[in-house]
Length: 180
Image: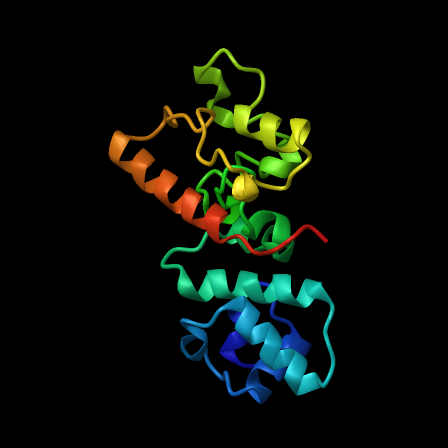
């Protein structure tokens, strides 16, 4: 048994495949993306693997590339597309410190975000417009992006809010995936 088995979710089969792909230590995996590892493993096996393996490898990516990974966040199911692709506003659930212990992710909580307690709204206005009113996955294709629904997060500084908004908009403007 190699040190790779210390990584959450890595069992005998994944350990064997990682070694066959040339990854023999945790250090050798640093900087690798889950999608890259998944493509390599599919090539190794000569077939397209179940997407659950992609989710597992995303969790591996998080674990090996994060200084102090949250072990609760290492569960493979927290690395499904719904948590790593932009939410309606462009935030990424898996990057949030509140996920998954405080928040289950925007799609799961259906816009009932934590910061609503600081407002008089019942639901996130972006989620309502994008998902409930227009039936879209995210605001990426909206001609009004960003609109007045993109309000300041009351739990962060002006500087952090500006940085977050910039990242969210960049994701939404670059979103090329479609709901399958």
